[in-house]
Length: 149
Image 1 (cartoon, rainbow, N blue to C red):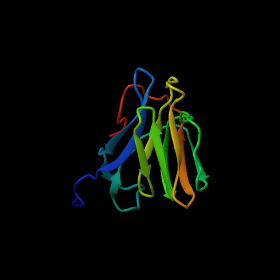
Image 2 (image 1 turned 120 degrees about the horizontal axis):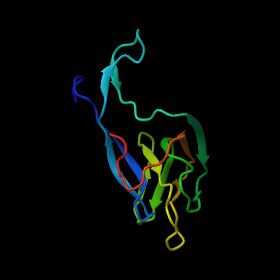
Image 3 (image 1 turned 45 degrees about the horizontal axis):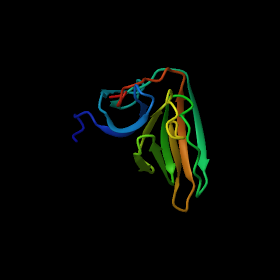
């Protein structure tokens, strides 16, 4: 990629279809513009994806931790800072992630199917998984993979 070509950044999207079943899709952020982040800064690629009130949390999942099936509490970016973790959706897809990978959790509005609702997540390996969550006060989309471009 040259410095003049907009970047593409991959992310996983956990989303709910019209039947209330959660899925994961590999998506790409590609809508970037080159600008200074503030007047005295050098230009860089900026891709604003969400404007809303947000909460930032850091969570530490201990080694061997596996949660219960659950929905994301609200639409949220999940950014692994260290360690590895997995997300399994109701369709049986399991994705493993580590530092430098992104996931957008938006599986609200699922319906129970065979004791599963939303997704299952847990740690992989002998280290804790440290995750940063950026949660938004915005309505989730339904039936649409790859919400952000």
